[in-house]
Image (cartoon, rainbow, N blue to C red):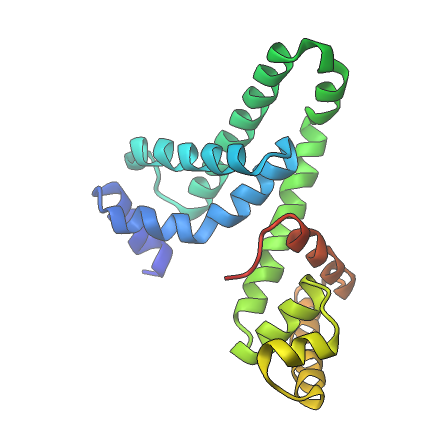
Length: 199
């Protein structure tokens, strides 16, 4: 029994620790997904919180991890569309602008794939040694230069160069194993700009 199987059993039995497990696993990615749809951080956080409440209410219906993930994305997507419709009704004079925000199913699928990719990148960065992960985050996600990183981490330029190159090499290896291009790394400044930092 893997960690997901155990958590699913615990979820069905009403153990709140299992809900926390799935929140840790999916909340940040879902919030990023919701934010990409509606462009509002507070509303995105509220929608995702509601999605987990709905997961808890229907916890006995889930038997596999992928069905939980699919449910969370579907219910978050629907809540985002409802939010946009309410906004459109509230601000009728902005109807054209809001219609542009309501994505087609094809666009939503692209957003989910994009979001899965971001989730993968962030997950792999979290696996790096702490110093490498921090240097990589500061350099690639926050756009800091070498001197700024040295000042923040109280380290030398050579240590920063070494940590950054080791991090990139490790990620490149992972990406090659998954047949992905390292060009996707350039999505990270977008994540940082929208406030979704690695903890």
